[in-house]
Length: 370
Image 1 (cartoon, rainbow, N blue to C red):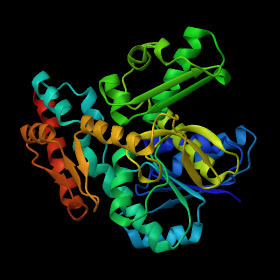
Image 2: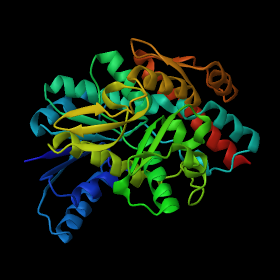
Image 3: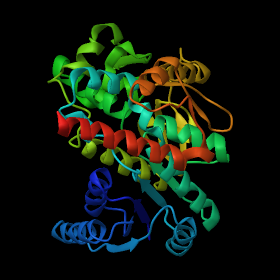
């Protein structure tokens, strides 16, 4: 019996739950959420949706707080999931994207980059990985919360970590595939997209370091594609900062989780595989992920591209102990928002999360007072 556990059934995890409920090959779905109201209802609705689709899967919900690592470890030891889809965060900053902030203030928030909110993604993921270790289970964790940085920091800190991330570069690759299909009239089976890039490539486009190769029916067609157009305005400009794209990230997470527990090799793109920064073309199957880079690109070069790309998310480097060091520009922008932080250290995550809550409340308060 294949069991998948979903850690966090909010905006993204709720989509993952619905996808898993309707996907063959998963017999048991276990959800975990700390709040008493959302988790049970979403799990029940997914169970009913599964029945409508003709499935008779087992569904369980457990109210557990990731911060209670002992309780989480006991649950994991009991459930023994084959894979875990993790999307829990301390809080989401996404409401700021639709808030009526003063234009100058909004510019400061953007200058601080998404990396400013890293502690909110890193802390729950670290708590989960400690619980997995304490439970002594062999499982695959797919982390959908800022995996390009979180997965790397965790693996360097603990020596193990999520097997893969979700979304980000994979969404870019899907967009390029559909663009090429639309502009050439060729079917997907004749098109091979190879992208190396980071989370920032999705939101900021081709100014971010990346590597791109395209073949159509075995012939190199890289120069025939306007990658900037494909990623920025085709078929329309997309707002990546709201809740709407969560279905894409959730679908990617489910695909990666099922690929890891399945035996059939799956050629795809994966964010942060086995603790590498950014995303890569890869093959998933039988518990393994192997990079599928073009012949002219060595793995070390691909990793270096994504290390440079991380600066567009405010990350200068990730130390050997998992400490995430911000760029000088990001530090200055955060200080303009009243948040002074040069680096995110694991032992300081609780305090950093509290400080970010204060900044967040102050920004929202400014909007209400305007």
